[in-house]
Length: 306
Image (cartoon, rainbow, N blue to C red; front, side, top):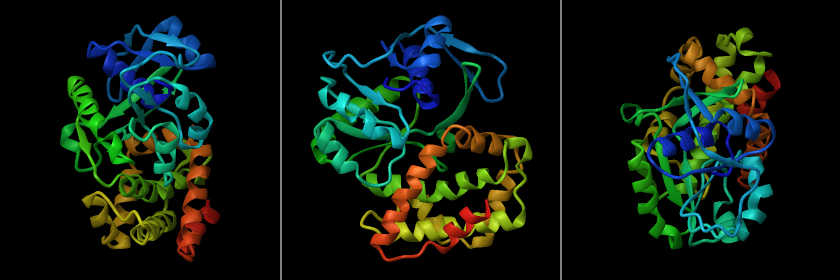
């Protein structure tokens, strides 16, 4: 497990509980905390903290032929870890992170026959060393589900390996044949929502009004149209539905969601720790817009507002 942030910790915790041997690769304070206290996780809505013992080290042993290497970093950190991934003898490398384009190039660098992408249906934040986690259940799969795909069909033979791994820990998993469409659509939908969190200095001060809700809605529709016009296209089906939904309805759902503690905590769990990734994804979206000769009027208006 390369990366022991929120996503890496959630998956590592589930894998250890499922009886798998897991090595977590972390740095600094996070590494020291895991080595001292174990991997601690608290599910949203519960007061109980579950701790599991796990091997934690500060670097990837490239000579070790891991069955599966999960790369749980933010998108702007991928380039920095590519050199060590290239040298790793891991049989299967699974990126568990956001990405807007360039998946085929990454697979080419790391190994097109062993590179997959798994988008996690989980979120949370780390507070005082404890991961406060929210993992979407099977009943919530219409909203989002752990989604696996390959950038190159040469890696198809690893799909069943990862599918069985996820089945063994009781987490739902869908497989997509449209990886880039799925990843780009997710970014298009989420980036305006994440950016709206910058409108307040912290979650306690965050109070989305009607104007902000309208700006978010317009930006979401604009970016979904951008992805629909790209080589990737829109996926999955529920995002195609959103792209056809009236702006006022998206604004209403956004405002109602952000009126709940869960909605606000989910938003700021990422905003407070993922601003660099947001900027990175924004640059990728602007690049795609330039290639289509499109102006991102609604998105730029949202950015200037917050």
